[in-house]
Length: 290
Image (cartoon, rainbow, N blue to C red; front, side, top):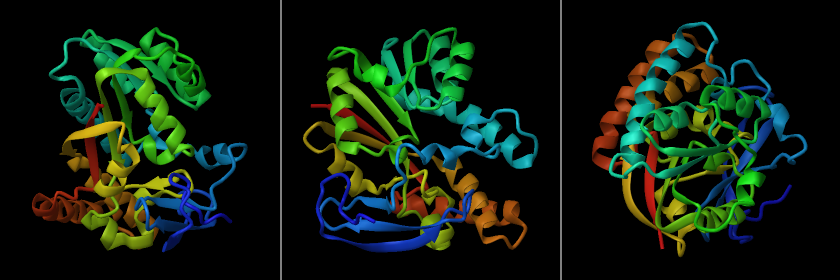
């Protein structure tokens, strides 16, 4: 089991938290902290040949729009609101940009952007998600490898909505994002924030750790360190709805019942505290290529 930082390769790391995959496998994992770049990372990191099995569940909502029940219904209703908010933050002041949604899932954001007149492109590792998105958009969604084969300065804007935490080879992929963006192009990243109140409250039960699917765990400092020298941070925006959903899922990890009510209360408290600290459960970072 390697404890070397997967981004900066420093061996100056230490244990941050021991936890398990509450969502699916119940296997034990550990989160390490790098004292050099401040990244938190999951160990052991499943090999690419087996990581897919950790996504094989009908409850994995990011690729499931039709599951019945209260939580999936709420998830999908909030998703519609979030898509509009994401578009305004990422594209609102741009004139129909050439947009790449990296890790586009089933294509909800791209579909909205397409309706707004944007020239769109998308990629995803999941074959099922690519097929679903391609049918929805009337446009072929490709693999990340195919996107990386495109020439320099292809896109005005690249978005990654809760994707960066899943990426194994951070340094290579951040270099590719920089290469694919035009000069002064925009990169928009949304990730969970482990310094939020709900993360501190739920500790190892915090659903947004989601090991081993989430290989990386970010705070403002570590995320800026990852993009230092390539991108300049322009603004940070809260994703307030995430606090409620993540808290409800965290309550399910605890397993004491009333997860809906308890999650709503904790999510409300997390957002209230974040008004002072800025540490919302999830944050959107807007970077400019330099």
